Image (cartoon, rainbow, N blue to C red; front, side, top):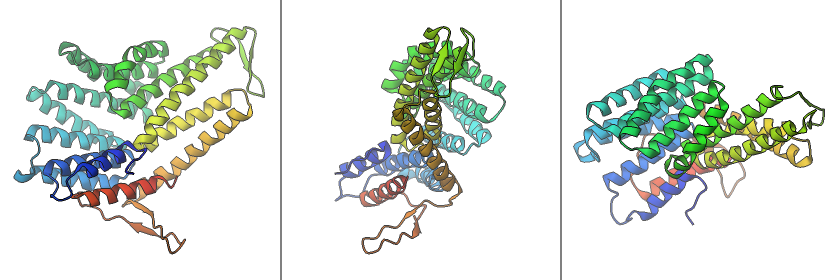
Length: 363
């Protein structure tokens, strides 16, 4: 039964199963499987393997016999992979350089969808970099987003426009306009959930949850009424309606956080998962301290701590490593996975998927 809760593993196993084992895999099969594997490695912080796959994919595409797509599209694909890897490594200047090159290339050759997509990437880079820089930097995302939205409206690219609106909502949230952000997200959410990449879907749910939490904090801060939190975590106020509003907002935020976590777990996206678990723990701490809420709080806090350790291990490791499991011995030594080889056959692809899944299951 070749099934997995990880969307990358499921896709790769399906590719392996659908390939004719009696024939050598086609160039398209090799590049497709390697591209999916590269994205998985980037999301899961296997940077060494991601860099190896990036280099080998570029070399493979450069050969006349390995060219799966026209040179322009191949260059755009390479630049996009480079952008994603640099963002995950927090090398935002390099990410911007790659995205700008891709944007110019797409514009120069009249590839309007690719141009709009790369403008969106530039905005996402600014949004990511704003988390570790002064708050004013979030405004840098506005010009590329507006240009992206203009292209989408002129050429009827509705799904991409919805994704750009969800990114613009994140800008509004960062500027304190949580109601404006929530309105944008509610308008765009349907198309994002239907057509957007899973990561973009999870990001929309996470941003919507933050909108609800921002409004709850705004109310609790004394804007509409004077609220107090007692030792048991139960809000009391002269206007009980405000306490109910806050409770409902936090419960709604938890629902969106659960949706975001469910998607991110399929992607092995440990960085965003840590953020979701952190917010879950904080929200459960603010709810009435009954046993169920305390258990949920402790579980979210435990997952947050575990992922922090796992992330640090993956970033500091030069190669992807997993424990060796032996049927003859309970001793679990460590062995390194050979890097730098494209999965050129079904068995090789299955082995790579198995190794990555085993390591993910350690947490």
